Image (cartoon, rainbow, N blue to C red; front, side):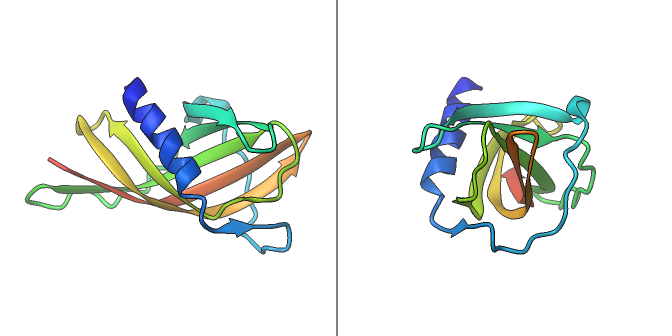
Length: 133
């Protein structure tokens, strides 16, 4: 599991090919309840700002299982920064170990929303992940 978290962290940093700034218009958002969040990883930006990544487990929108091997799910993850940040990736590669199917799933997540509140920047990403049974 630790190997996958390190791989995800590396993919997140390497996938930062597109950036957005405060002029980007995004959907409004509300940070989910803490009991719906599962810690994924953490680290520091190049500017030294601490961040954490959480998966939103309340996201029950799921594309279901397709017959004959391929499994897909819709996922939402939240990245939290310990300071005001207005430049972050608009796309991230997300890989994790799915406990429902006991497989590794991955996919590209796109920025959904972001906001700054009480000294923290919150960024949500959503998209479809797939795995093979």
